[in-house]
Picture 1: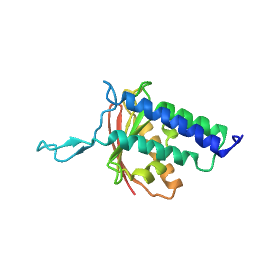
Picture 2: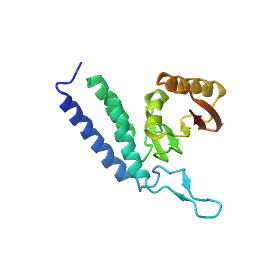
Picture 3: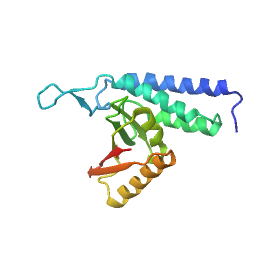
Picture 4: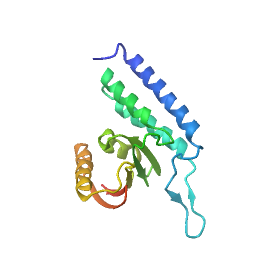
Length: 185
């Protein structure tokens, strides 16, 4: 079912996004908020620092990502999907959701999403926005990754990229609830 007008769809999405930004900014400096992992400079020489533009990069990334979600579909079903996606995002992982970090991108060095299920994120769209070289997938509800789960996830990653015309070369390693995937196109 299509919403009454495209402008009401866009206005609803803008309002949801503004709520997300307000929530994100209020959580950013609280204890337990997201901790950056990309360090610029030389950490061994003591000149390494975490990227200080993460709050701006993150909110801009989410804005661009939901724009991709809006393309071609102004239905109530798509609105519910976008609303659910935005409700999961913030500076804190309040529901022990899966955290996916996109790291070492050419345009953005570090952004992340929280999702209930890996299939809720479009990797090819994210790659198009960030050109990430590595993903960290942290599943708080899992004590450790199994090879079966990793193989299934790697297959899903490849399928997502191939659907959009990419041919990924992936390497991975894991420890406990963290899976690291290096991506080359």
